[in-house]
Image (tube, rainbow, N blue to C red; front, side, top):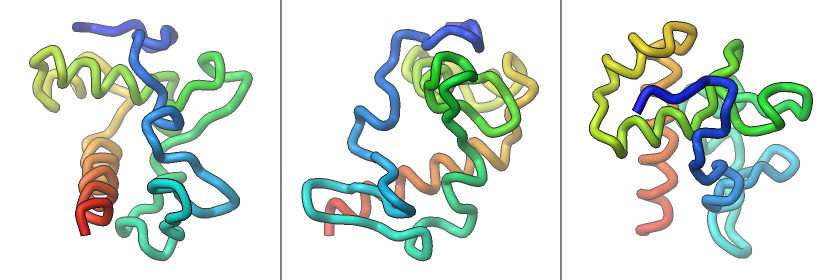
Length: 112
């Protein structure tokens, strides 16, 4: 799926998937928080942004208009990371890798 970077791409925003940013912390599940110091080396806010005036306020890759949901929807539909980066040249490989590292960290913390 080659998603329009301005559309929401029909996916669930990250905030609805259990990773709400609350005053510098990330909500893992009710009552659990992970602080910036516990996130992977690149803080999530260094690779993503969310502004009401940009792309209807959905999470986007910092410095672009590409929704994070576009990345996950494309992966779900069978695209490779290289294809996604080709389709959305404003997104860097480092941003994608840091996002995946973050998600892996969250999953590992939920499992422990």
